[in-house]
Amino acid sequence: MTSVAASITENQFDVAIAGGGVVGLVLAAGLRHTGLKIAIIEALPKEQALTKPQAYAISLLSGKILAGLGVWENIKDSIGHFDRIQISDNDYQGTVPFTKEDVNELALGHVAEHPVILQALENCVEQCPRITWFRPAELIGFTEGEKHKQVTLQQEDKEITLQTKLLVAADGARSRIRSLAGIKTKGWKYWQSCVAFTIQHQAPDNTTAFERFCDTGPMGILPLPGDRAQVVWTMPHHKAHSLINLPEADFIGELRQRIGDRLGEFRLVNARRLFPVQLMQSDCYVQPRLALIGDAAHCCHPVGGQGLNLGIRDGAALAQVIATAHNQGEDWGSLAVLKRYEHWRKPENWLILGFTDLLDRFFSSHWPPAIALRRLGLEVLRLVPPAKKLALRLMTGLLGRRPQLATGQR
Ligand SMILES: Cc1cc2nc3c(=O)[nH]c(=O)nc-3n(C[C@H](O)[C@H](O)[C@H](O)COP(=O)(O)OP(=O)(O)OC[C@H]3O[C@@H](n4cnc5c(N)ncnc54)[C@H](O)[C@@H]3O)c2cc1C
Image (cartoon, rainbow, N blue to C red; front, side):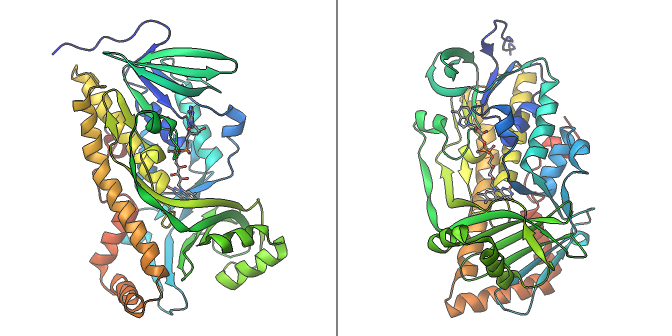
């Protein structure tokens, strides 16, 4: 088989990644030792991209992928880690504690703020001379060539044209590339919105994450360094809108009613932000010379903190598929190669989309049989160790096929 020749002219690339968020940069970092010439196109200026006030639960598998990329050492002391997750259902007395011992790991999960993880990935890719940034630059269109895609960018007041053997859409939930490619999606908007914010508290121990289910929606509380916690509070739209607009003291009062005194005294340390919630799965993740990753391909309910973790796995999986094809002299932009990525990731993402949807619906239900069944489910999780381990392996990412990056192989 003949090798696909590397590109040589200035605006010809082997892979162009539109979207320099965490997911796009995981892919870029995963490809940095392949010798492929890579473009990263990011619409936001660097300073703006690095100030997004969001924090994410980072699963054990995502931690291993970040370690495989060499960025873990640089972030591990600046992020939160939790040893336990406590799950509770409304005012039901039985809570299910999951602990790190259940999975034989040093922690059960991690919590990273967006600037910390994005900066570490940026540092990693900036060391690679084969990676070129276009920023701030917006992808505004593309056309098909026989062996490449021709991509048009808007950078300040000028248009730039690039050629690439593969265009990757890492441009988020409202992906322009997905629309331009005519890829349809399935899914729905939830009846709920999320209010996300950070608090500083006085709990003596900051190593427990909480997932509290309530009939209006779940609330996740994730430990951050410096006695802080990221809270994601899901509730019906009208309630979420009114909470966002409440004076801070009243908002704290509502929050206290919901979480009790488990965190001692607390105060808000950043603004409350409102997010709509949706489930979305693209009909396909790939076309010839095109692949979707992260939120461009799928979105899920934030219960369980899975969205970014799925995207990190997409990025690592696609990097592996491209690198393997490149080593074997195959055309990594061909549909046959890209289908390997889709066959790997789409079913695994469906599983989490379905599971998080079920969790939200089941735990918000007022229907007595559903209430009885979920309490039985909690008791099963509490009392039957294999059931608990299976649920944990699913939510920590350890159940599916692991990218080589997570296993220490390249
Ligand atoms: C309240 C809330 C809490 C969440 N909590 C968690 C959690 O705990 N754990 C978790 O795993 N996930 C969580 N998620 C999900 C997570 O935020 C997303 O899944 C994740 O941010 C998606 O990353 P991405 O890189 O795919 O997309 P994005 O972060 O949206 O990045 C897309 C990038 O593409 C750029 N871009 C867009 N269009 C263009 C264009 N035309 N040209 C060039 N660049 C472009 C954008 O500027 C952006 O930088 C949460 C979501 C919400 C709403």
